Every structure is written in C-alpha cells, then in structure tokens.
Length: 410
Image (cartoon, rainbow, N blue to C red; front, side, top):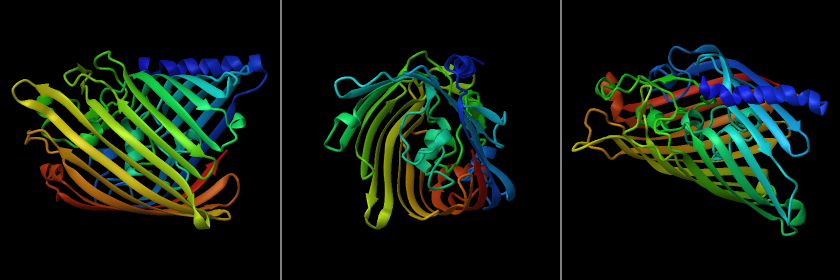
C-alpha cells in the first residue's frame, strides 16, 4: 500500500487545490474498444511467450486501453497531475501509473527550471506523446518503449534546466535533466523471462505480471510474477539526459539510466536486478510531410550472484526501431520496423535468456471527429527464443496480431 501513497497524496492535493484556485482540475480521458485477431501463442500477460497482449485465447471483442488524467494548477508556479490507467489483463482494473507535483518558476536569465516529485517514468519514449502516456501513431508501441512501460519507473524527483524559447532567437533549444528515484530494483526481470514484447499498456503501482513457469524459479526463491516497482536494497537509482531540438523540424535526446540495485538483495519474492541502459532517440520532419522517429536502447542486467558459481542471470540487451508516419487530412498511415535481442552472458544452463527477433507494424488511423477515432493495425513478429523449448514450444516463433479499434477521447 505504501507504493500508492504518492497517488493518494496527489488525489488530496487535486481535491484541495480546486476550491483554493476556484477551478476544477482539468480532466482528459480515453477508452478504446476493438476486435482482435491473434496468433497461436499465449500472451506474455497470461504466463506465455506470446509477443502481444492478445494471445490465442483473446480473439474477438476486447477492451484495448483506457485512462483518466487529472491536472490541477496550484497558484502560478505549481502543477499536480494524477494518471489512472485501465486494463482487463491486470488487477485491479484501474490503477495509478503517474502522480506528480511539479514546480515551474518563471524563466530567469534565459533559462527555465522545473522540479518534479512523485511517481513517473524516465523520458525515453518519443512515441508516447499523448495524454495518459499513450501512443500517438500506433496502437501497440515498439518493443523498446513497451519495455519502458512494463517495468521502468519509480518514486523520486527530477530537475530539468532548459533554454527559454522566447529569449532564444536561434531556433535551437535544449534541456538537461537528472533524477534520483527509489522502487525500481526488479527492472530487467520481465525482459529476462518474458522477452521483448509489444504492448499498448503499462504496469501500475502494485501490479503483478505472471511469468512463464521456467525451472529456475524452483531454486531461486523468485516469485512466479514480476512486481517492478518495489525496493530491495534502499539504494537510490538515477538517470541523466538531455534534449536538443529545432522547433517541429528536429529533436534529439540521449539518456542514461542506472537503478544501482544490489543483485543479491531480495524483498517479497523479488530479486534486485542491477540494470543499466543508454537510450538515443531522434525525431524529424522529412520532405513530403513524412514524420520519422528512430530510437535505440542498449544495456545490461544482472541478478543473484552466487559465490563460485556466477550470476543466475547476466544478460546484455538491445532494441531499436524506425517509424515513418504521414497524415492525410484527418487520416494517418504509419509503418514501423523493430529489431531486438538479448545476449545470455551467464553460464547457467537452467535458464536460457537469449533472443533475437524483428517485427513490422502497419497502422491506419482515422480521426472522425475530435472525440472519435478508428484504427486498423497489423503486427508481425518473428524471432528465436531458446527458453520456449523449456515449455515444449518451438524456439523459432512467428507471432502476429490484428486490431480494429474504436476510440473515444474527452
């Protein structure tokens, strides 16, 4: 329950600030329903190795996603935000994904400052640019940013220093940021035991996602589920990064993340994973009004280092994607290519974590009115994952899912 404390405090701030400011919190919301046609694998959300949130048992009508976001200005310099995300795969159906209190003083000497406290994710994704940390161009996010939504985030503070656009005649702007956080020590567990996946959701504080039943769990005391946002060693993690952009033409960002977890720490059935990664992202407007997003992420994770035997899991991983999108009036076409992999560095034969794969996504979206939109999307994923053989599956996989959605947004 302590992991929901900040969400509860932010709810109180929002309720108390409304009478003081004379304004009710601004609310944005969205819900998407659809029809799913999926492959033969069991979804990673149902203890399987399937690459999508919809597996062989999910074909037919489906709840796709939904969120409620509340924003409240407190005076001229403070903002509070609370985001609740809905899921039919996780329990409870509605949970806290972000809860922040932000101080934004007036620009000073051509610089803008922002101080943020609460529960939030590092600013890795260029895909999740809409309210509620939702994707703008596709229904299912890339493998890279799906992992960020699955198990990267924490409770802490972030400081950002940025150039003031109004005082900068060059058109080039920049920012640098740094954060210290607690409560993300198991990050890496889902990547090791479920692999790279594609999702339109995100884990909420208190969520548990069950793993495929790999043999290692019988001797490692590891629970058969992931619980990403807990603390195992009382050591804070951090991330640092920066952005350069030129209006709507070009944006570049680099970020380094290190949760500093002790690989031999343990709490509530979850081991600490020392997880580090570097993320690079670029977004550009190309000729013919074509938008481009390119991202790359690479890192390492290690857990449970046994003296004389080495680590139970030691892996390097990478993911990258390139996405092209173009709007035609109220309609949009998007194509994305993903490539991803995990290299097994440890010598533990009981738990192979290696994986290589790639995927194509094609998506069509029609914004019928301001509040209503329809989407049709197809995801194809192919790859090789050795651990599938532990459950009697072919290590080579060919997964796919088709989605037709109707979205309402406030």
